[in-house]
Image (cartoon, rainbow, N blue to C red; front, side, top):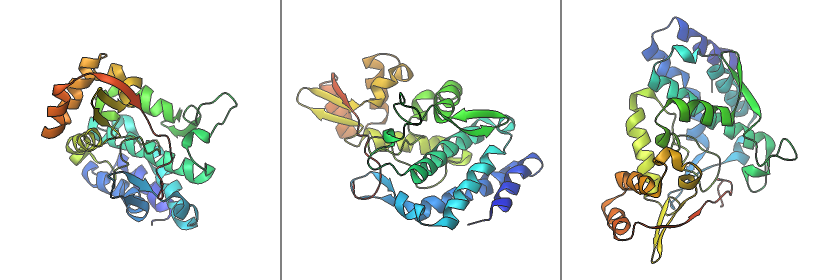
Length: 257
């Protein structure tokens, strides 16, 4: 892992260094953290070893340094795909740090900064271009507003089993569209995304909470699912395209769950 000042210097060099070089170097520390602590499980759900990272002071410092490096980037000067990659990586890295620091026993929703909080998402946690931002600000105020809203949901990870997978390496502009579509396919073709029953479809609650991003109707949600469904699943959906219920597993996406 690189030391704090070295990583921070990389971010600041975006102002003068060629963008192509900065793209790959900036997110290398996140690649290394994911490579060391992400667990690709046989059940198709990626998990993260928060406990092991919690016990490694050097890697925790590297994570803090990476987040600080992203905060230092003049993101408004980046092109669309580079900006998307930065915001998605920042969201995911901050979420990992939050779980490591707060150590909830079973769910991210146990982190309640205020008595009335339903989770940690509304508290400001980073400062980018002079603006203090919460995780909600990044996801809802920036990413869903400025980018392709349906695919945003496959890019950000809320440290939960029910969420689309945390990607095994950093998001990058060069492969962004293909990686987002791969994430959508992986989630939709997994039972926690879409499950077919005799009565109809049981979907992830993501498609209910954010229905407006998927056309605002059940038909829009079904059309989105069919865009990424494998042939067998698509045939089953077409036989009975009725949404019966929604579900979501808030358990931490850690090994052993």
